[in-house]
Image (cartoon, rainbow, N blue to C red; front, side, top):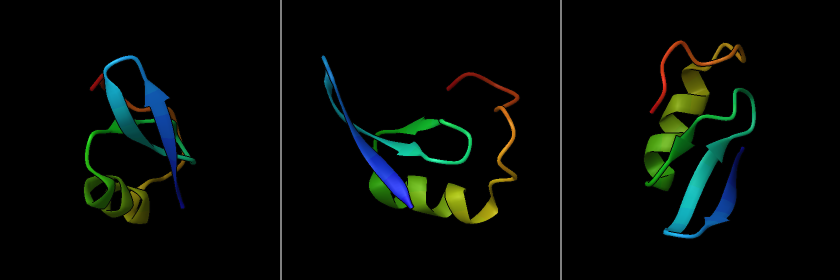
Length: 44
């Protein structure tokens, strides 16, 4: 499940497994389906 996060510049969606942030809920949901729950190897 993705979590909604309020930031200064708007609403973001966070993968609850690895913490990666997305500006689109559907992108976050797709990522979470494939997430291996490790730290992201890149910075978004």
